[in-house]
Length: 132
Image 1: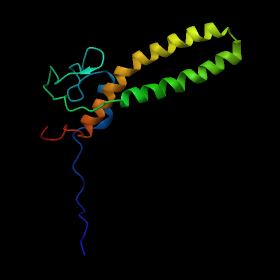
Image 2: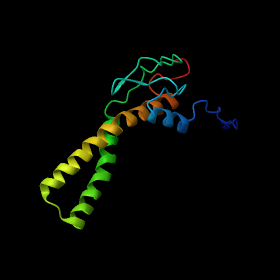
Image 3: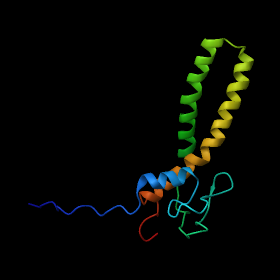
């Protein structure tokens, strides 16, 4: 019969929460100084400050789905509340909430993408491993 090892797992040298905070700020998850994104959503090949390779990331459609989920869960209740409270003209509702939806989406999307890349870096996913 095999016995299980009682050795503790290795200490995490890439803690999740600080990495997510750096990613949310669109900064390199390793050093926190260099910009992670080049342009609006394009992830840099590597950090210009510390040289950490960032090209391994595989965020794909995840940030878009999470952004839609967040915006939908904020805007839909606000629409219901505004309509039941004031009963505004439908065209005013469309105008106000369309602008709000687009603004929230454009603000959130790069931040959520940065957090996705930071999550992958912290958990050593997709080539962000010890030797990558």
